Amino acid sequence: MVPSYPSTPPIPGQRSLAAIVFTDVVGFSARMQANEEQTLRLLKQDFEIMREACIQHEGSVLKTTGDGLLLHFMSAVQAVACALAIQRTFAERLKSRPPETPLLHRVGIHLGDVFFDKDDVMGDGVNIAARLQAEAEPGGICISQTVYHVVRNKLALQVTRLGPRELKNISQAIPIYKLLLKAQSIEDSTKAVIHHDDGSDPPLQRIVASRRTWLLMAAGLILMVVAAFGTRAWIRHQRAEARAEAEQEALNAMFDAETPASIRTLADWRRELWDKRSDALETYNFGALADDLRNPGSPVTGRPEANIRAQTLQRTQYLFDWMRAALQHYNQSYPLVVRELTGTAPKEIKVYVKADGRLYYTEGGAIRQRAWSEIRPAMMAAIVAGAIIEADPLPSREVVRGAQAFANLYYLPELPAALRQGRAQRFRR
Image 1 (cartoon, rainbow, N blue to C red):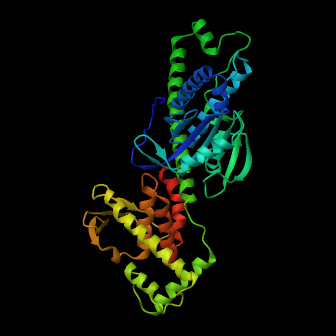
Image 2 (cartoon, one colour):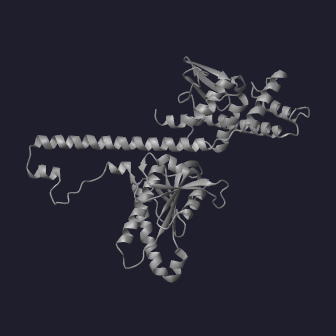
Image 3 (tube, helix red, strand yellow):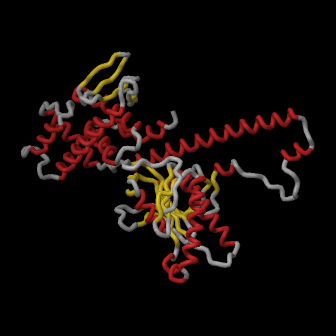
């Protein structure tokens, strides 16, 4: 097992959005058969180089996979920068023509939802990264489209789009990009050192050598300190921006594609309930709505529209179950601030849920208690948006689809619109 030195260690038993890097040695089995001792020695050396690069880019080495490593990063930008640094190091080594043929590595990178166990990490994020690695050329890097969209404005990449690929045991085709090793980090460019090929001393050394006044030296040191703090602040800002874009990209990927048929059948259902003077929608009476679906006299009985309604109801119920649990993480001292959705919710509403399952909120300094059924759909949409935007870690796909189902069922298009941009804005406040 390769030792790990994570700067932000994953918490076992929790899901998290992570950039996963998978590496693998090209032709490892053949190399082992030809010269096992030499291959293992080279592999150990390469693992050490990868581990050091991972730590320098604030990542974690989670485990070995025989001839490869599984690396974890909170930032997709850092993950790609690390992979480029590793492969460029190995590429330079090939130019030196060593007496023994070095190993060649493939690298795959994906940004997605993963589950951390005590000794392992699982999930689509891991599986896709492993499949992307197999698509890379010897000495190359392949990244998913999700990763590319996050890093394209943060790294000066040279890429080739390979298009959607059908990957083994992955249900959907994954658009893939191949990275060229000449890419350079924008952040790295700010740290470049100017080398003087004529052998002359750099400016600071000439100043020292010429014994300029201490005032000039002090001024220079002050400027260096200010620049250092400014650079760190800029780097922190860039990392926050990268994380914001990554989480928003992942959240947007969770939405289902809406069809005219689903929108139409839910509009028809609202109209039918209105004609029957049913208040089941307004009071979130999911039992009554389920009874309505099972009614043999329903106009959609035995038709595809019945399945659409049933799935929408199931997803909305899941959302409400998640909301009751999520809002219990807030309290009177630390409430959830509800964000206004196009004027549908009052400003500065703060909510939380106690152990009794009832909703409490403050408005104008007064604490009010309400049953869930008393909250109007427009206000509920604002609470849903606030809970999902502020949730840490990012909620599951089922929660996001539940919010989308709630918005479609109650015709609240402002809810998905807020979710498609609010997660990124959360990190920019």
